[in-house]
Image 1 (spheres, one colour):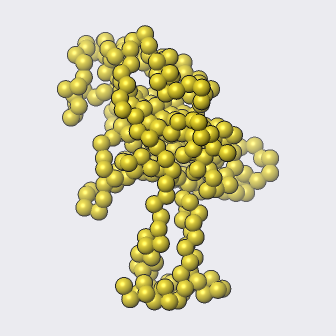
Image 2 (spheres, rainbow, N blue to C red):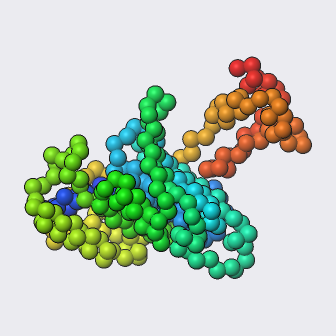
Image 3 (cartoon, rainbow, N blue to C red):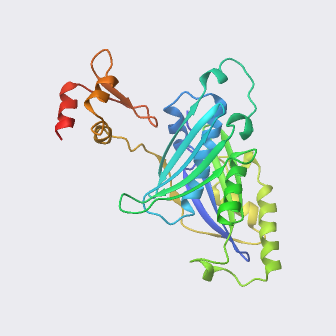
Length: 304
């Protein structure tokens, strides 16, 4: 059962005296709701918690009005994971995995190269049909999801990033702590403190060292609020807190959306999709809701 007392939020912050900004994400009910739609093995559930928390942190660091999507695709036991977050703070996610590889008590190495194999991770911002999608893709390089994301930002965005992730499938809690060194070019450059390059580098290193002292147990401790955690880490230098954003699980599937998809298929393709009961049944991957369409409904779709 999900921990209803554990916060579901993303808390933005910045570190005083340094050009460092960050996001702290904690998920209780939202993570539990995602797991509640599926019967994942423990390892897959843990990965989904880490990916969901990380996606929420990355999404909140961007300015967008629409949808932020993080997706992995690979050739390992967990072949795909996807999480999307709307600019309003609703999120959902699911994973595809090889059930045979997780059967029984078989031990599986949880390092990314073993559990996910070779593949890529894609970051997509979708602001609607009248706008151009932004997408960044990089190879899955690193022992953990956090290392893979850090590698992407370092190579593709030239943005120093450090990420801590944690998830517990028993208590249904997940968390992400991310800090980034503010770039010295771009639209927010005027917000940077005027530090020498040496001071800039030293303050970043100090922020990363302090961040690395945070334990998994602290990140997932319901007795510590987000403000408690950030104060515990950065009280000596000072930490500035900004308005937080609530997060919750919410699927966006609907009969109308499924209908629109089916209407794009030919009559022959639709006939091939029918069950023995002469129905077409579509199941949402995110929430497992089933939508059934009979001949009359399909005829109406074709007519529209």
